[in-house]
Length: 545
Ligand code: TEU
Ligand code: CA
Image 1 (cartoon, rainbow, N blue to C red):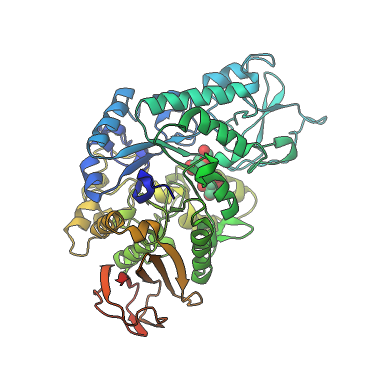
Image 2: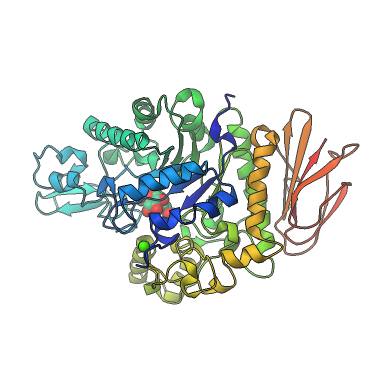
């Protein structure tokens, strides 16, 4: 496999609205990110992925873009973005922007034009359909944020498609003019010095609404190959697609280098294990570790040599991993270190979401009014009207609301957690005084330093980057252990998900081999034996050679 710069890179995702507020208006901003570049350089990350900072009415906190070529004033200016690219570059850090082109904002000039009349030159930038005879929507497609995916535009008497909020009309990717405009915009940003894109719901670009085909449409990969050819080709970029519906076979189509589409995609099979299989995230269920191990092993082995994995627990849409997979109580830091080791020990590119590196947890606001996320609020209103109780809705919201990831980054124990001196756009998690950067970095057992060490290991051990993956103890209910093999080396990674001591029987991989501990959240091991005693949430990596 051709070696590429991002093969041993670690990406840090920033949700700018909640990262650092430099001008005390309660909203995070680009100058705030610049003020934290030394912190990020100290952590050792190579790439920053910024959730959208473009002009937007903020109906979906920036995933509804009204000007792809300008920065939302609440986040700063184009000059601030240029300064971020330059200052990050001085620290060897590259910038990915969030490409949200499945849809635009309804306040984008394209849509403002398109809705003027049926024969407006921009009409076919979007997807319009006649009402049915009885005036109802053209079909039963549902929007992700509740309700029909069709909104009637009174002015022209036609419905337009919006798979998310009605202020996020879907762009018509069958229209070559749309593709030409988007590619030109991508090239302007690449020429400005960004290193690539995270691509929002990219799997929807091939949609065929009349056949109710939303993801993985027949034109999807031809479009991505055209996009690559028109924008990414010849540039040293990193791209990652958000693909909730991708199987490993589909992930290979996106990420096999010879197909010239994307570098990698985010698969969500492991995330869905804490969702009800049919009802989804709003019917949370405990994850099963044996299933989780099978999912990770499947993605590790299936993509080996034919694509590239992304490795993550968290993002701006997901619950905090320590609250779902670890422990929020006495083992918060130890379980967070274990979860980090699980991810950073595997093959692929690890992603760290802001606050993950200090073990931030889910938030449990008492009142629905404290939740700002359109998905959460629409869900609550829709389900309350259907007769669900407030309490059962709030329990599900406490578990999987996207706002769990969006409370302000907790920098210190001062009011508003050092994020701002003004009341933030969303309340700070009440646990900010015991969970914050300043507090963590003063601890001997700092989680930040555990992440720092994992990132450094990736740079110094090729086995972590290019080693093959082998699951062991596959049926063990509380221990996730796996091997990495590379040349004459074997890496053993052991992770206990149990709150109590556990004993496991190791396969005979350790016999007659020296054992060097690379990282641990407990005691270093100089030797192994058939029987392994593990303390609660104990996790380690050892090199056997
Ligand atoms: O998310 C797409 C998406 O499907 C998720 O919102 C998912 O439906 C939900 O989080 C699962 O509960 C992307 C962005 O990550 C998200 O923030 C945007 O709201 C969405 O697209 C629309 O742009
Ligand atoms: Ca601000």
